Length: 318
Image (cartoon, rainbow, N blue to C red; front, side, top):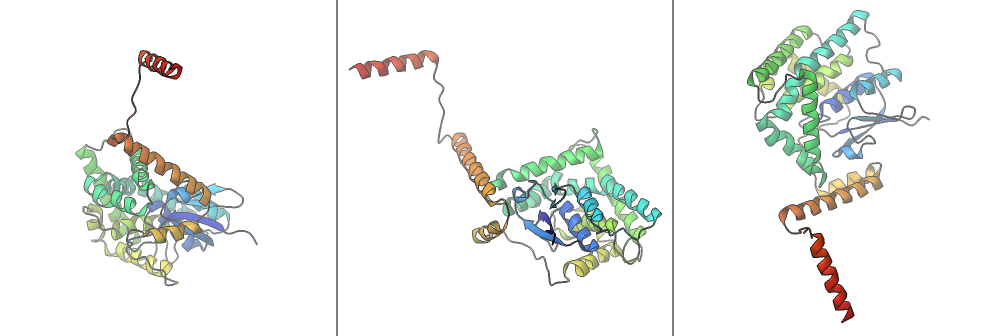
């Protein structure tokens, strides 16, 4: 019997099976297509075989870690949620996914990673509390940088964080996108009828994060809640596909050391992660000692070194 494919993704929170947009997309698509995955829900991306999340470990193709490539691989393995789509519906899928990436995703990134109040009071705080020490000191910063680079790539070189006009346009585009999605869905159960497709996985993951996460500031959430068909759409997918086996996703509290240790034993690459964690911990402590002045490194000039050497030689002769 072939080894099952293994999916590594961020754990869930706020009533969602994953707290990460890309991980949530892959998990949802897997549910829609019936792909038999062994899912590892992690606190720490370093436990992934690629060092990033989501990541799909396969027998033939190694590790795949981009959302679109993971979904493409599942389709090649005959787990295709788009099997019954017409040529027009397949074209509409590409068009709407592009719309999400160009219009809604930038505002989503801005809401979680650029908006100062949301980032400090929610996003960074959440990752700092869930990622184990000492990785929680710098992994959130790496993720922050990566999301800013992604936003820059989508919006082009003209994007600047401090430009209020560009920020206003960013949210205007996102609100228009939400309204368009609401009009396109109408009274249908899914975007192409009674069965979900890959487009539904992408749309649901974007909407569910906006709808479920309680942020200090969220213009997107206010507008989304005024569109009842999209709210019902998200609630139905959560109920049908993620509570089928009694699986629920309550609000998480920070992990206890015992819980972290238990989870740690179950994950692969244990030895590597132990070594990395110890090394990072030592570097963090040394850095702290140097910065705080507990330990100092003094530079000795060449003349002074010669004088010290001569003095030591005289002491040895005596």
